[in-house]
Length: 160
Image (cartoon, rainbow, N blue to C red; front, side, top):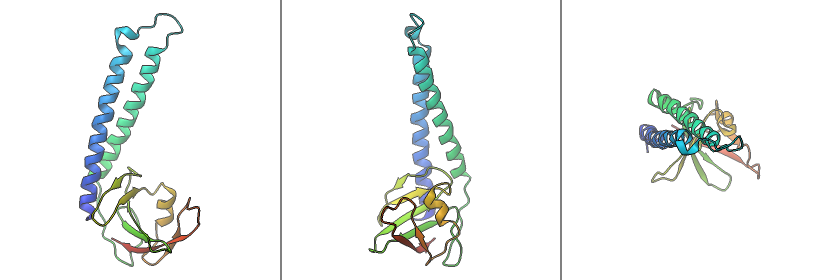
């Protein structure tokens, strides 16, 4: 899978997420303002709780909207063995047992997983511990993944 397909996949997922959260925010807002939610007494917090849910859903929709805009405006960079890892790098790491991990360094949407015929690609961001550790490395460099209980290093085997 090339990086253009990765970006298209992320944009499609973010668009779907945006629709879900926008719809949920609208539904929660309607519930919060519905006549049945009018408090019966000072202890009835149904409308207040529904408004908190609506605000949370709206906030998440706004975050997704921002991520979507970033991906739509993203400029893909080309990499080779000499160029340091930065945003838009597709990085393949190998552990000491020969297991491979493929990561796409994106501006947002960390944790998204993309199925590929060559295995899974995980989106990470420069704000994540692993993303910070990878920035500036090149093919052949080693990195210890933060949170790796075994403390085993990974080798950067390719960057594209």
